[in-house]
Length: 403
Image (cartoon, rainbow, N blue to C red):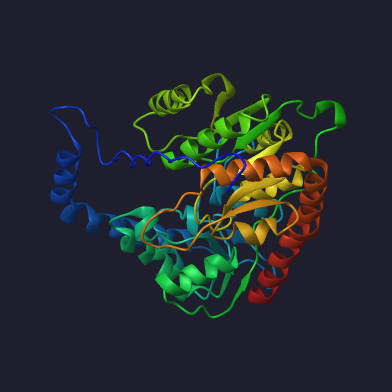
C-alpha cells in the first residue's frame, strides 16, 4: 500500500464535442446535418482540387542528378517564434538541413501527425513522375483515443505507407500500432525516434534552477484526464512537499475555449485545495520551450499511450527527469534511469490514465534523487536523441533514394 494512501479517483470528463457550437438554435446535430448534406458536393470538388494541386506541385524540371531537394507539402514553414506542435516541429528541424523546396523537388517528406492538404494525391502524383516519397509515421487512430470515425483518420496514413519508398517509425510502439491498424508493409522502414537539439535544449545554470518542486505538464492537453490526474497528483505530493507547484501548458482541447477549460481545471484544483499551486501558460513556441523546461523540476507526462512525444526528449535534454504513464512509446524514450513510470495495461478500447497516487509516489521518488535522475536524463538525451545523428540518418536515406 502506498505511503500516501489510496483514494477514489473521480471519473474523467468526456471530451466536449467539437462538431459545432452547443448553444440553443445551432448545435452539434445541426452542424452534422449540414455537413452530411454538403458532402456529396464538397467531397468530389475537394478531390478534384487536390489532384490539380498535386499536378501543379510536381510540375517543373528535375533538380541536378544526385541533388536532394525536399518538399514537405506546405508552401511555407512556421518560424521558430510561431506556436506549433507535433509534426510541424519535426518538419522544421529537418528543414534546417533540407530547406523546404516547393518547386523542382525530387523527394516528398510527410509526417503523419501533420499531413498537408491533399497529401495522398500529392504522393501519388510524385510516384507517377518517379519522385521519391518518405513518411515519418507517428501514432494511429483507434477507438479508445479517437472515438467513432477512427478508420477515416487512418485511411490516408495506410495509403501513404503503401506509396512510401521509406518509412521512419518514431518508436517501436508506432510500428506495432501501424501494423495492427494500418496493415501495410512498407517497401523499407526503420525505427528512428524524435530528436532534439541538445545544444539549444540544455540544463539551466545553478543559479537559474527552480527552488520549489515545480511539476510541468507540457505539450497540449487535449483530454481532461491529463490535467485532472496532474492536479490530483499535485495535491498528494503537497502533503509532504509544501513547495510543490504545477505548471500547465498548451491548449485545453476538451473545452469549448481555453478560458473555459482553465476555469474548469481551476475548479477541480479548488475543490481539493491546490488552486493557488497551479499556473497556466497557454501554448508556447519552440523558441520559448527551453526556458519553460529550465524552470521545471520534473516533467509530469500523464498522457496514455503517447506514441513518441517530443516534449519528453526536450525535457530530458534540459536535465529534467520524467514521471510518466509507462504506456505507448514513452518507456522507450525514458528508459530506467531518466525518470519513473507508472505502469498500465495496453488497451485500444479506452484510455486508462495513470493512477494519481502512483504518480505522486513517483514524483517524490524522483525529487529525492533529483540530481541523479536529472544528470541521467541529460546524458540519455545526448547519447540517444541528439539532432545531429537524426539529421545524418535522413541524409543517408535521402542520398540513397535519389542517387
